[in-house]
Amino acid sequence: MENRVFLQPAYVLHKQPFQNTSLLIDFFCVDYGRVRAVAKGARREKSKYRALLQVFHPLLVSLSGRGDVKTVTAVESGVSAIQLKGERLFSGLYINELLTRVVLAHVEHAPLYKSYQNTLLQLQGQEDINKVLRKFELALLADLGYALNLKQDCISHQPLSAEHYYRFTADQGFEQLSQVSDEQEIANVFPGEHLLALRNMSFPDRTSSNSAKRLLRLALQPHIGDKPLHSRNLFTSRQAPDLADKRATR
Image 1 (cartoon, one colour):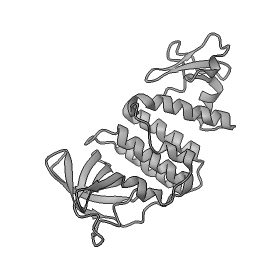
Image 2 (cartoon, rainbow, N blue to C red):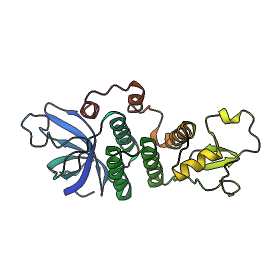
Image 3 (tube, helix red, strand yellow):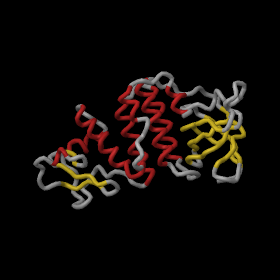
Image 4 (tube, one colour):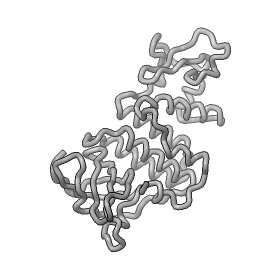
């Protein structure tokens, strides 16, 4: 990454207080992936950056510095921040935390950046939340080089069938089971009809929707690590007064 970057398209993924009046920010940049930078004095009431450095706000940022942690030298934006509420807010914070965990620093992720933008716009609209999140998770896995093959068995290379059950192994794929018995209760076993539903992004019932969520969690787990995602707790607590700012500044 260059020592000086001018007006790079970026979003704030996470921010936290730094020293007395500054912020330490994780940006998601179109050309440089995740970039950590210090915004000096950004917590002062009169700071020109304070109102702009919010999550879900499309920004143009200028950065400088030779080390891994850069310094913010300018922030601009000609549009308003994307407004999310309730579960859509929780979903936005969830994808921000995913990106903070898995996106490499100073590595281009342009297609994923576009997918992230589209996901935020869909969350702001009326799109089904489950479908929006599953699409983003699939795009994230593909960007990491571990795209799910929802077309065929990874052993026999036969097409996935709605009539069979499949065992999923992260970073490998799906293997058809010769017999089922109680194995459908095992965490990494899925009915073929649910895999096809995910492939088609068409969930006829809550069971298939929950199955897709469980599968994507298993697929992402090796990349996220063992530390729990804080944002997942929001879906169960459902208590989010002004969480967009509170969670982002922790």
